[in-house]
Image (cartoon, rainbow, N blue to C red; front, side, top):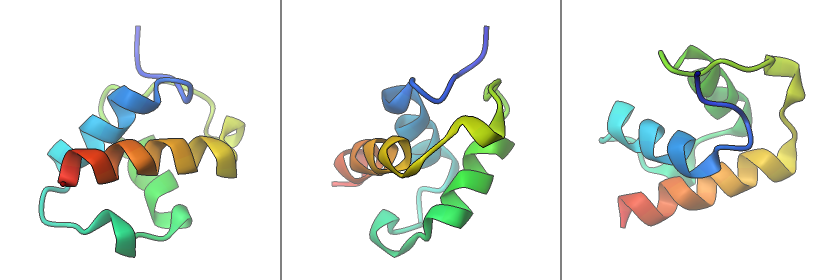
Length: 66
């Protein structure tokens, strides 16, 4: 069973692990969306995301980066 959009904690941690040198404050949602869809364990419909979901993921990523 892969990661779904509602798994914001897991996605945020995976982005931190995959892009340790990227400052999450500088990432556009369009880029972040693509990076999430490209994660090896991601298994959900790419069209099911929205701004609220991406914001929640970004907050986790920011927390991990600090």
